[in-house]
Length: 221
Length: 311
Image 1 (cartoon, each protein chain N blue to C red):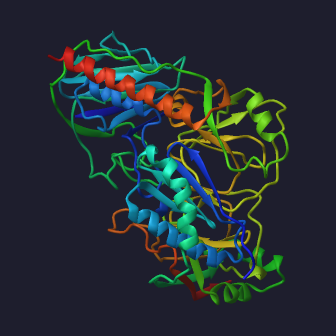
Image 2: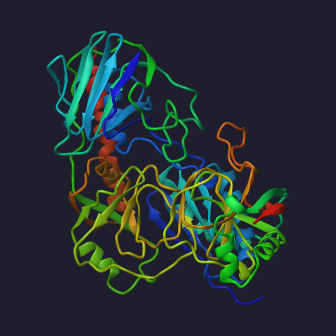
Image 3: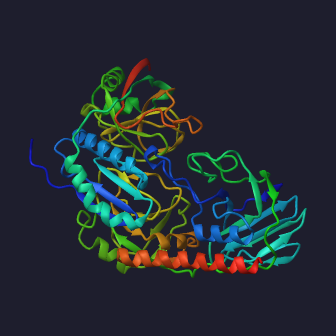
């Protein structure tokens, strides 16, 4: 294992701490597993209103700003004791219709990489994607592991309205829009899998550490 | 019954917002000026976190089908009922059938309306009545209030007419904490940001106040891994036009941060309207603690004064 530099820890406000392990990461997913473990530990202390993991970093919102000074050194100690462990996670299968009116950008993605529409669907659905964290909008899952052959820049002009359930590629990432919203990613398909339901006991169907798989239902031309 | 006759530019039901669900991507929502919200609620005898109506710009009308105590605070929208002025910062008694009329705000942007009583709204979502306009839930319908929307408030008459309270003073000098990205941004970015005066873009909304400046040159091509953002985070997109995130902001973002607005100064963004000028100043954590204590003291003084006056 390569030597790691120490994560950066900084008070962003009187009640907010930013813990950044990105630059110390020897492998993104391993570091992310440690971030999940640290998040779980922080959550269990009851000192925080919100504990928000993102890409190899963690932001903590304190209930009482008086505890800021004591948490700053504590986090680093805790990190050094944290080991990457695997969580009890759920694997989700998302039936997906690729192309046609459900995937208006799939032809563009295919042309960009000298692939056929079928090959794009095959490549996209042949991977298992770990959920790194949720953010951007309710229930939106940031996924790891898009095949580099499918990396495609975002649209130069974002769409005003991307339909709920759209399966899309943005740069080196892929994801599903949980609600209809504006968006700049390349839309390649659609899933009826419900990622977010505000009236459900747990509003988000997936959680960090879970894995997703897109299953081809149909490839439309 | 409360009926929205004319919502004006934007009107929504808000309380102190929704916390504890940022890790699910669920944002905060809530009043941009939580102090104004607390003060108007106290003037009408409601609990501090009772929902209120946040009114943007004015040009609005609300009809009341019962007798109520009401209070408005925030900017002066030249409000009136039956031709009688409803001054901001005072409790008023209005009669069944009255219509509250608001003109356009001239010196600020938002006003908060409290109605004394029990608001009959759909069940709170994650412990909050705040409307999350972007995600489409909370409040009355999950959306900004529209003409014809109505809801019941069972009146409570446990206050009196003519109670007044001031808001903490306004400022266009915004105090901020240093951010984590000074070293990755082009040289002088932070210095230029602080040394320039900024004006509010018309593209601003409850998600964020977008800032413009002539020839400031903060353009960059820095791309960062996503991190959590919250009201007060000052993002710098590649076009060099900073965005101060507000209550309806997303929970994570990938733009570098110029800093974070101190908690006590976030309320100023409720009153900044397109074209207004502002500038930023770095302060220490200790300064931010003190600023927050000052606001808490303001509320404590009000609580004591109201206790005395209501006797």
